[in-house]
Length: 133
Figure 1: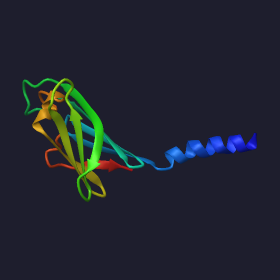
Figure 2: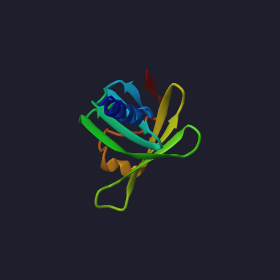
Figure 3: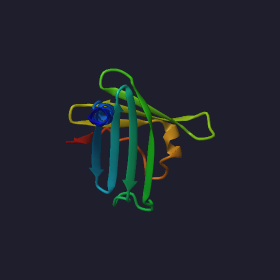
Figure 4: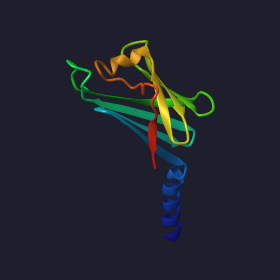
């Protein structure tokens, strides 16, 4: 019985021993960018979401929220590329992530407008999402 209990605990902890999740956040006036990068062994998953309320200089804009997630691949030192296929299409939303020790900058492809329309966008406009510690 003790062997089975020890084996069960070992299996549960071994799967999470190599898992790590980092959260990133940027608040720019009424625009909020959030990103989560999860590494489980060699698999990397990126989840990005935005919530935008119009700023004073964005008159006529409407509030919006958007999110996208998918598997990412390393594209070099401190760079990840996440591609999400648009359902029923041959096009992809691509997020390029430039990671630093304190945060990340995000660039999106034009096809990401499928997920984030209007004021919403995943691009961080050259600003850095700060890594939450």
